[in-house]
Image (cartoon, rainbow, N blue to C red):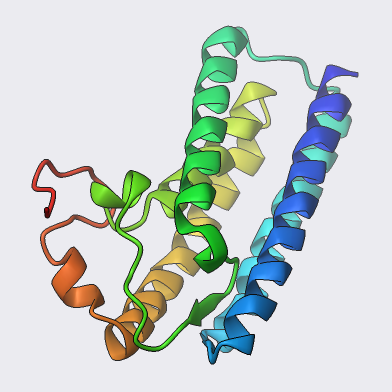
Length: 187
């Protein structure tokens, strides 16, 4: 029961995020935003959709229980959700599940983006590992951590290429690491 309740809450959160992304996509495209990465986006959707199918299947098949270290994992999950909200709010209208760049706009460098280039992807990587571990769905954790890594390898390169083409991304973020916070914050 706990598993299904948690699963439904995460699904509802994702549906809400897709609604925000669609609204932001319309706003950006109305202002001349250009979309990139359409060829790999379907694979990202596939991996994330199959992640939830696998999690549900493994959870129900194994009649999963909470991990023995669930309080620790639950705290981590809560922290990740706070970071997720901070990231989405920091990007504002520029947050999306697709790569959409508004030419000549300034890259967002506030919130967690002051410290690293891709906090959103750190959050996704962490969740894809953390959510299955919370319910001892080890196969889902292993398989989808690898699959997510593969799609993010393509995604991040395409996103940075698009941002470099149409914004001053390279100048703004050259001192920041992709995934690890740096103390060198530009004034």
